[in-house]
Length: 195
Ligand code: S6P
Ligand code: ZN
Image (cartoon, rainbow, N blue to C red):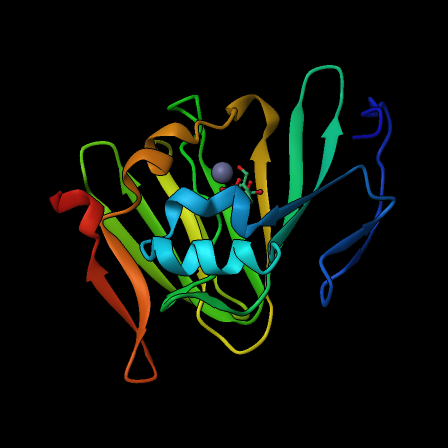
């Protein structure tokens, strides 16, 4: 990650909505099947992919807009199309560390679902296509699933101070997994929850 600038004046950056790329780009993270290995339901399918070489699942680019007293970040995520077994490519998913921190997601391209769930188990899902904006309230874990044939691109706006807590989703997943059944995206009860 490059040094994060502290801005004292208005600032503009270039953004390409088809690729999710910023110019300048301050931070780029690649997420591969190996980074999400424990999160997919079909472990033999994960191992088969890893045995043949790792595969890119999504890219995240963040542009922090930091001033002396604010810490807003604009992030873009590009989830590439594909499945692990029958489960579609998805983000890891996380809670914000702070329970008073919401987030805005704006789908620019592609189709899929935004899964959200509180620690107490209130599960919500938003069907996504280009143009949908979803407000994720504080204390809802969030994960995006790409069920389309092309890349799913979305923008996220959040405070850096929100922080990220990946452990609960890594341990249990969401209430439902989204898989392909008879050629259609289908939500099935997460087998890890009933174990
Ligand atoms: C940050 C925001 C997004 C995600 C990104 C990747 O709060 O929700 O920028 O970081 O979509 O997802 P994840 O779950 O791997 O961080
Ligand atoms: Zn978030």
